[in-house]
Image (cartoon, rainbow, N blue to C red):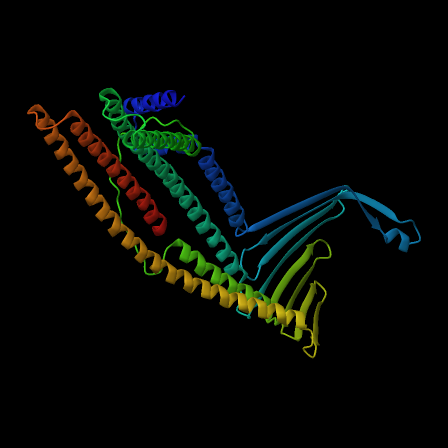
Length: 474
């Protein structure tokens, strides 16, 4: 069973060398086939839908309505005044209104209406027109549009950051899994070489009879052989688990690694931090707006203005102009409603003034607690922003040290490979002249192959670090 398992592993190595692909191909293929990454894309698309819904709230609102009454009746009272009967005249009545709401803090609203009444006998036609507008000025310092803009900006930045971070982390998971596979391949080759050497030692003992099977030396040699066999079996098992992990992460089978791009370790540092710090600052601003909103609700200070013009075009035309002006404070309000009605016979003005006052006891303890809680959240969010900015520069320093450490490891790995290649070539030459053995050449070859694996895994570590730098720079 163990021999069959080893044959399978060796066959995988052979297939890997024939069908090996580049790391970029592996990552791109994994993105296409992995359900995990496809869920990242779906989540991103859903977030974009949410953003579009938030953006629609900032657009101008328009509402139009219309109605038609073809069975309209108008009673003619002139006959009743002469002692006759009341005559009902039939006609058609139509009306339509259009309302436009602007997306500003004052919620400016403009509304226009048109109505037409026409009798079927042609005796009378009347047209009514109306136009009114309203706007509210808030003097508390709170702006609902600012709050909406902060929410939209935070959502946009968070969505893009989440998508990019998830993509880079997915690439890291693929790279780390590939690195693990290469490490286990190296371990298998070294374990197999050690096992073969120990088998040769035990076989020589048995063939030459230099040690009896009951001797301590022979028993120790067999024990070492068994231990090496167990180590090889464990390495093969780890390799199989790594292959399964690769298939799970990437959605594809392992066919080997051909090309590894050179890592680009560019550490970008910004004075104001990255997107994560920006989001933290936006949340701090949003907390300030939440506090302002509650304070504005408990201590209102606003001025509302509206005006309306309406009239009819008929035998008895008239025009009405009216308006309103109201100011609301924390415990009082004052309003004035002027107006005038104009007909061809006379002009009738009107003016209504009203006000309210309270002793200020309308703010409850619960309201004050809510305001205090929001104030604490505001201060906490501001502290979080400062912590985020401080952590950003701490992480920058840590990444800088990681880059320096990797560069040293990469330089050592290349030097070790160059040395191992030189030793291998020298051993082959010495073998030709009889100054070396086949075993020495194979050992040198294994050291060279191990150094090649070490360089590959070091480069993969660098590519994983490259993703960390990109995440930091988002």
